[in-house]
Image (cartoon, rainbow, N blue to C red; front, side, top):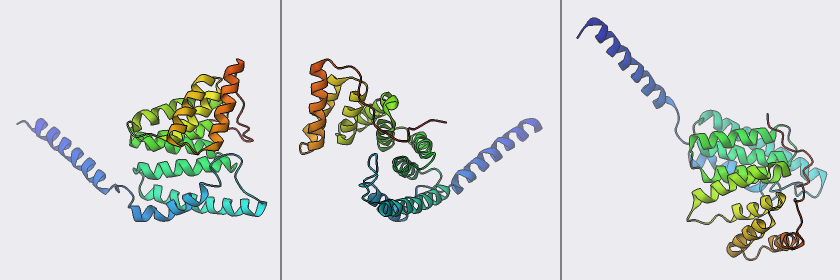
Length: 231
């Protein structure tokens, strides 16, 4: 073996060794126990910030929700620094910023999309991340309904054969916003076959059915006060 060949071989070996060492130093997924407190906070936020406007009864309650949101943001951002390659942390941040968007937090919409796309980059078949993106776009404004539809369908496809009721519910709404009333009724029927006691969706289905019967075109806007604007 010539000196040049030996040098090239040694260089390649050292490069592979460095890559291996760097990979070994990177932390793995965040332990479930570490995520427990953040999950508890997210669980408290979900009923209040699951749509727009937030379900608060007073300005003081809104301030309390905002404080809890900020605490959760700080906690999850710290976890993201400690576990940068954990897609579940990125997904949780995506959900949190979806809530922040409904709380009118500046740039929350962009942050939501950024973290969920990061989660998908780390785990390409991540059902929850696609679902979260679909839910976000469904509520971000009528102009984003098509993107919402695309991500919701991807989540449904990836979850098969396991049903995904939340995706079908949101899909009924995104179809309606696009004036696809027949598809809206069909998606609502699929959802109601899974969750038959959702009276709100039964009322929505009736609205979509009337729009279909009347030959209406186009759908109603979502009523967001602060629409999502991408960077």
